[in-house]
Image (cartoon, rainbow, N blue to C red; front, side, top):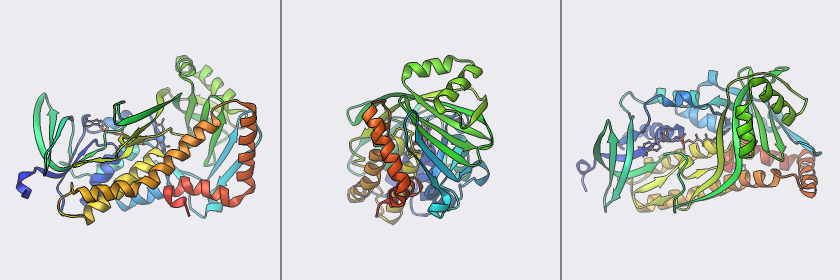
Length: 384
Ligand SMILES: Cc1cc2nc3c(=O)[nH]c(=O)nc-3n(C[C@H](O)[C@H](O)[C@H](O)COP(=O)(O)OP(=O)(O)OC[C@H]3O[C@@H](n4cnc5c(N)ncnc54)[C@H](O)[C@@H]3O)c2cc1C
């Protein structure tokens, strides 16, 4: 098939941070025609309430793309990990890991805006939704709905970056029966660039330094999330204080938002002329902030494979190599987050004791602590 017979080489569906990262990374080469589309209006990310902990390795990838917004990120200098109602705690510091910061906290909207600002003006087709896909021998034909009309677009490769998938036969879903309640709260005293991960029987509670405030991920069963969202600010701050304990006082809060949490795993990362990356490939529990950090590595690795690969971006051998190459990082990240949630989200006394011993062992054993820290800083590269 000639170049003229397809409209684009790579069609990226979804201009979230992962889809935009891929588009920017591919722009570094000059051989591939790339089309990026999103069903939302450009800039709709401005309403997203999330703040993300970005690993040191993620910062380096964003910087390589010219999309690192230093002013929007708050450095994490140390992380304090403990469990409520049990002994054992550990602390990870930037000095021990010999890095400038263990990670950075940034609002999703600032991350998305920094990536968007690097896209050429006409690079994104917004308000354009993928409705159907047909794969023939040499191309995939996408049916796209835009401004009430349907158009078709022929691509050699379709990259799915649509974010968290609905349940379907290709996706396994394991519901954590936990919701994340999000807020930004003012601490007293100032946070001093310390992050807290506090495990409670309801689920993990994370405090991430963000500007002068803490971005709070308060994980609880769904019915408790209903109650937290219905509270006025004073009652919410009191509930947060009870869950966290007395070490930091909370004096003011933003409005709250919530996300139901489930582990969603796509069984296959590729199909003929298609590949899935970011949250649509795997949606993880937010504990220890792995989701986007894994998704950006998906995008980066795929871009490197495409830039070095054959002229046909949908080449089956290239896609198979990419999928094989991602397994280790993907499985490691899933096992790490899922293991933490399941081990810590209960109040069974012997398990509480075992967790305390685990935290104590981490505290007493620098190599183990450095491994856990490395996982958060570098992802798969933490493994020997
Ligand atoms: C509470 C919470 C806290 C988190 N904290 C962290 C953290 O600390 N660190 C971390 O690394 N990760 C964290 N994550 C995970 C992180 O938010 C995700 O991994 C990341 O946003 C995934 O990006 P994405 O681009 O794959 O998907 P998304 O951000 O969901 O973007 C998908 C895009 O695709 C578009 N789209 C969907 N369907 C179509 C279609 N049919 N046609 C066209 N466009 C379409 C959507 O409009 C959207 O813009 C957290 C998640 C939650 C819920």
